[in-house]
Image 1 (cartoon, rainbow, N blue to C red):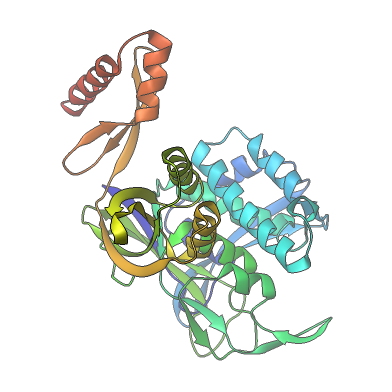
Image 2 (image 1 turned 45 degrees about the vertical axis):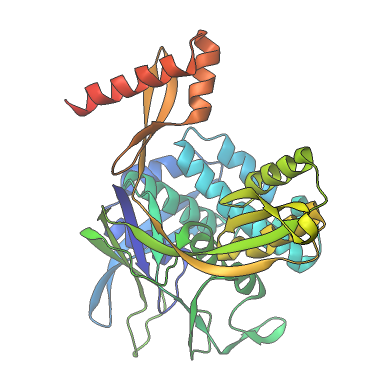
Length: 385
């Protein structure tokens, strides 16, 4: 079973709207505010209220502060790593800010450690982003899904002149995401929201099945007459399989050693590939060769393909887009012989994580078989009570 939050962002989104939707769905405001108070952000206050947008009730929030300090990526990253929060909150938050830093560095032609955040490094953006991750944790959200993302086809007046309403950083952040164009002369998807959605949410050509438990609405400050400026979230569990589209890359090599081949596969999986393997084949003139197959998400395709070509020296790669069915799964931690071990629980099988088995075996001097048998026995005993 997996717990899912599905966001309707057809008309755009902002960080405060995403957090507002989760608060409206029942995320504990007081606990989130207390956790955010552990960050070294100086004096600030989170104000939460309710409003109507085109007759629809929604939650609004704003961060009151006087701070205008630009913060570097390393400053924010250190701040996050030093918190006592759950590991998933820290990892999700760091991933979003790292993604923004990488994009900003590429746009401005500087190193990542030289990037100074301005809008996204301001207190309100930090509160919106990290508060969103805390809300996900307190609502026990495992996976995020989203609708196509609304973007504007119009322009905005800035201090640098008239520019596209989709900011340069936002445009890069939305690469490989499905978007719908709205004819508005204003920004309707912010960099913060684009970073959160591109890092954490999945989009599929097929609908995701959810048994809806609760819903929420987060409103922005803009209040147009044409539509409610809100982000909607539906939260619930799914037992069903989910279908998503993945990229399949294939290339044939006949001039690499077994050691080299093993290195290629290891590097691909360590990077961004979902999986990678090599199959022995016979080419023309009886030459023994290998066909390398790599799976990756559409958003990771450029990086994975470039790495595959670099590591193999191949002169070409075949691409295809394939649907894959993902069964629901969840993870729990148990104590085995006094050591932590993670179990992956699927619809028809429970399996200890192999790296944890090895770590416990080394720490206790027991065999992998003994550790695995003990872990499964503990699981069976817990599941019966």
